[in-house]
Image (cartoon, rainbow, N blue to C red):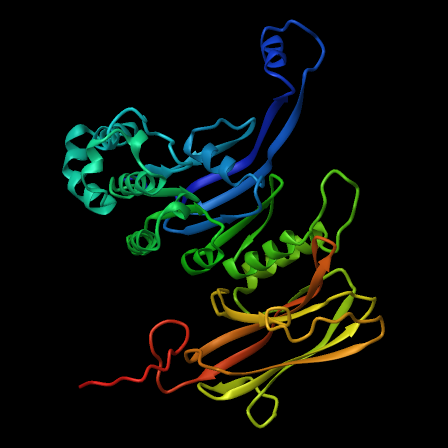
Length: 425
């Protein structure tokens, strides 16, 4: 018997171009070849993207709106055809793309369950055998007998997701659809993700929920303006994504050079893949300020990397101001080892410092607080930001600049201790 390929999905040099017309009549004239003049301009949705997803991996795709995330999922699932390149898929796919894809709005819920199942390749008998599980997971009651055009967006996605995960797919692809479900349904869906991972199924999903990317994904892929900027551990890719969000990335087609050039992105991606979650610091900004030093002090003011749970500590940052800044914001955040931001604050939230600063000034900012995080290892990140008019600007950020170990002999549930006082009468 021939052994199955290690890769469930292989995307090789995929490019997708769209023709954009100023008006519908231009599209018609172009289709009928009524003119030799070019009536459209091309939009490059994907630009020679390569991607390999190994069997049993959970991979997240992140990026800003318009980065090509949904386009690549549609090409993988066969909804769209690439302009160039090839896609190979080894395994039965179940996909939950944009709301409404694959459903007939005039049919009721039961009819759409059978319609979707048959489109994927199941027989009527196989779908009937899974019907109770689908209805139980969707939990929309008698609405399942009503036309889906009468459903709320929440009911619609419940049914769509219930169908997608209960027909025993080998590859599950989800595009941001869970954002319309309530918190209880989302918890049910992510529990199913965990079951799928334990069963060795392949999951590929797009989400703006970075904590979910960190928690569930083995790898993350960062897309921007149709290009793959990097791939590696979720924590590293999320840090790079945050740079993209504030404009610290190559600007395509303008000839401008940003603070993060192509080689720096590739090197950061290589470190993410080769080094894993090592706590390596990532530093960037527009150069208006410099975080000269950071420190974690215990309740006696001594530098340390270990804090006893329940005790007070001080987190400090010393900043050199390199140009006049109207209203700087000094911040820190705490992430766990997966890269999920647990907590954090800044001087604007705390209303602690709202004045301007001048070039040449030095500031020491101290955040003093009690640490009620569960025992474990954490990473501290620091930032100096502000608003230039309406534009949010990063003067300097230092991600994962310090490690912090919380020492505890009693951990409760979740990320921090609620310090409950219990009375029983």
